[in-house]
Image 1 (tube, rainbow, N blue to C red):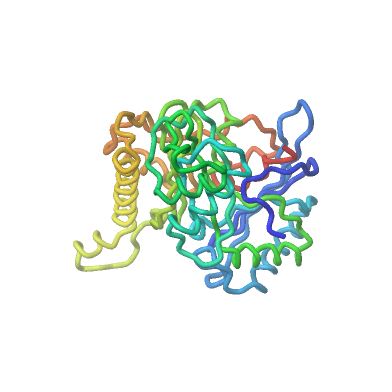
Image 2: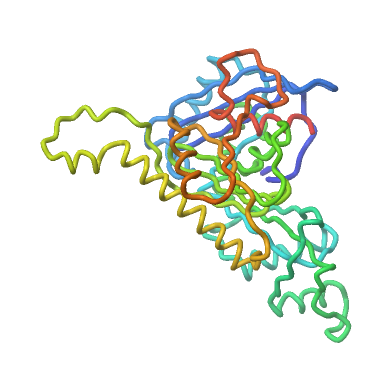
Length: 367
């Protein structure tokens, strides 16, 4: 059975965090004990051949199964409980403004929204939702008239008795949906590997969990930027609370010396790795500005200002991207130093940025 995307479950003290991208498998194993900080036991990365996974879709189940099995056996991971990061390309995340009702009643409204008002880009969506803390509910969005009729029917009230909810009676509801076929494929693969999937989670949640384990402050309105070689996660966080996320496919390639001889210097410079990297940085900055404008104007948040942009990720030459952000953006740019995390590890060579998602997943532990 597909486990809840958002619901946390009590499991053993040792847990695995697993991230699968089109090019890599990343696994992190942690152990949590009472009154102690989480301890990182093992971590490992495996390279996937091109064509095994594409845009989050499994194209060759046998080769993916073999790659994960070999990585687990080689590094002797002991836990069978795994938290899995759903490929961002296959996920829909929406923040809805709905009447502040019980979980059971909200479920009916979310189901109505999924069927009638949300444009889902895939068939047979499996979805889950969570009601966000009340303090983040500041604006009122007008819901379709059909919603009012549905409320009347569910609550047994006549149209005359039920009025549009006021701002005080609304709440923010985060809805996450993914294709059932994809989730079933991954679940079947875990079963064949004798792994127990305890949760399916979106990547920004994992990064936020890391921030909670660090002394880094994320107050005010912040963009959390997790940059990877093939795509990046742009997440808006308000006073530590998740608001919106967007995945963008922008390719960052490591800067390498251009060793090819080319008599045409202009063409050589145009196609150089330096130019490619700078172009990718410009594209990413444009996406950040687009997301901020969407938050300002489409969601009627023009009365608030972004305080900072927090940058993490596993690309090489991150300092060049940070410098480009500092030159173009007016917000404070913070390069996250994950070494201040409140976790224990056994290796001085531990690179948290490379394992940020899998570590954040593993830190769900037995909570």
